[in-house]
Length: 248
Image (cartoon, rainbow, N blue to C red):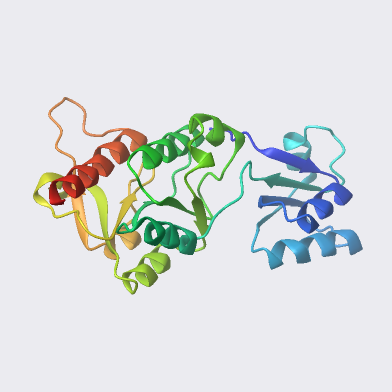
């Protein structure tokens, strides 16, 4: 599905976007073009750990909205990203155990927006997404969140597995959703927890799953074998809510 991004085109416009502190999700640069202005833009992009795609002129022409891209197009996030540390501080300020939703390569902006909305309503302290092979905070995501993006922080990390391991050191533990897991009602989902949900087609990757402490399945009684990822996130998130309320 095509993302709706805030598109910035032209060398001066892209460079000013970087220098003004605007959050850039992706940068598309004409392959083989390495003159002074492009080198400056690339330097700014690498400083911000921005994903860079070197593409042919035909690709730039295809995604250009103005036809005047000058060999460079940037996709800017509709909203600024938070950090995982912000989420932990948010939980601490509220006197609550951290509750964070991790998404392993969710690519549909409508799904991401719906998950952010669910995270807000379930009292999660934030949503974590990877930098690569996943949708960012596009305009479509903002719209699908129905305003929740104004209140629920989203962090973008380089490596989901490494982030999980780091947070284990902070006392968190992790449950991922998978059809082959234990029924979620049989698991203890209280305490400082990260809920890990997978890609729309392939689910949670084997690498990420290995770093999770528990694997939870959602009981299903119908004729098909899977839920939409945003719906599945809501079901598992509200089991966390139910257990937290029961434990009080």
